[in-house]
Image (cartoon, rainbow, N blue to C red; front, side, top):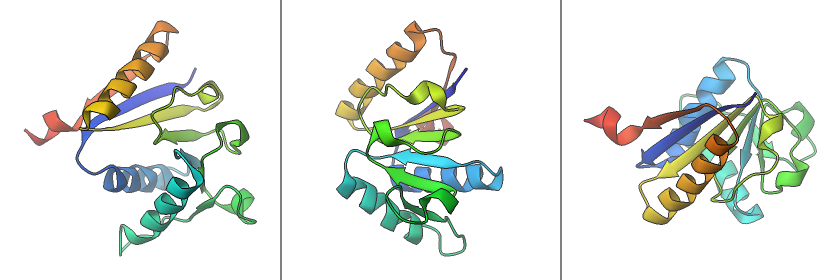
Length: 142
């Protein structure tokens, strides 16, 4: 069964994303990042190359010719996802293909619209019997 983790109240999703990708790569996981659109996917791609000056987060858009050989893929087409290890959802949408992944990570900012959409996804997973781990970044700071 897919492990689901919600990280909420994130001050900066890009930095949180980069940290989670770094951790996953250290554990030799394959990572798929699902973005809202092709433009958003390109922005994530650029951001991951620039976040940490001292580390390397190898990533490409899923449509790139080297996608099959790259451990971090960024896509915007849920029905075309290539990997099935770790999925990081940056969208506000309820995913349908999440259950084929070993782990699903949901990143939720402190924005109220983001929280409302995340609550709906949380209820969807919980109502289907998934065990959900929730990590509230606001509580970690205090």
